[in-house]
Length: 308
Image (cartoon, rainbow, N blue to C red; front, side, top):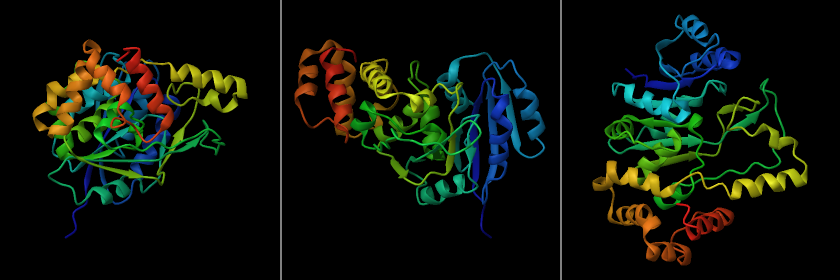
């Protein structure tokens, strides 16, 4: 008898009532998967809880309502709460729409990975607030999976991520005090310990763009050339992501599980703010880079300015 994979979806909700029912309906419609949800309400003040309780008749939902700690903290809390009795785990935003094969496609590509930590993520199809098609003249797809790459640049969208039980157990092993975003951290942990990372260029999710989605950047679609140039300049000089901080957290939680190469790199990046020799090396060497020229220039500038 063929076993149906059990997938636990981890969803953080904050005032998501406008689009939440559509997303829950798309999760309920997943094919070939036994789906359960852990939903953490990050202090909503709208009708999100009412909608979630209505869908408890269609879906196996475990609902938690706690204080507001922001999206990164909320998803990390969900990782803490998640039980390791499921086959696979997935992150979900509150306002997207999943195609019916979204989870099954991921599980099929991860099915041969059981003992090793393994993570799947995919491309997204961006749509407007009513799920209508929109032009994407400035979209680029970044794919990185090598550990030095993902410590410098992490562009994998968390809303597409599915990962196995082995990776969940690793994530639960150490909850960092400081994390940039939960999806960055998940990919970085997987890559740091030599896990498998699978990228699917085919989108299986409609990624809704609207004014309340702080990650979407809907306004960029209407920029004129000057506004777009200024936006890119601002983004280029945004050094809010601190690789040295993340490296230190990875070192605390997973150092002994890394191979010699990854240990050396994480040690170098964590020590770089206080070590001129390391910073000079990282600026001059071609051995530490991503596949993307602009990001490499930006990384070297961040190191040169000691904004790590």
